[in-house]
Image 1 (tube, rainbow, N blue to C red):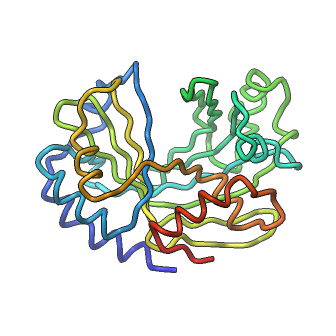
Image 2 (image 1 turned 90 degrees about the vertical axis):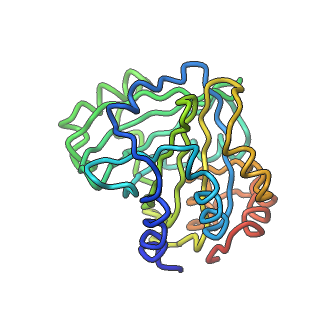
Length: 260
């Protein structure tokens, strides 16, 4: 696997050339009528993209940090119900994750739901840590969401990655850029990295004009959905059903180098 730290260090000069935006300023960007779109590419295209977007976007900065480290633990039922729902294309569908912002050591238990119209809704509570869910109110939270408690689920896949967050100067969209994604499966013990793969997610207010869409078209980077939970599960547990993901994995391999 390529060294994610090396990528992180090489991206710092490009981000240093961009104007910063604080978390407080970010909170004013509501995007109430937002649309989401994902793209998958490689580090080489990311370097080009950041160079071309330098004057059109702010970069989020938190206590001097512009590239943030994340950890996410996805929970599922013992028979992988959440994975199977996504694989089979069923909506509405939900998933449970415990996300830790490693730079600030803040952790949330989250439930995300995607409805029949492609919209995503998220509910979350802050917890004391990934291993302290019960004492942090996880039982009541999950009972409200699923009518069953923590014992019905188990940790399935963990990932670590780095994230860059950009905001356009018009403050009508947010752009998250994830790289250095690596996975560990709690059931199989298997670990996998994703080489030079980069996942870009655009969240914007309706269909307002977007500078990054013009740049991505210029670089010939096309939209492609990417679920970290499903792809991580597929890479680390070959026993899972994966027929409907085969074409997507072929396309991902074309766009970035995956260690498989």
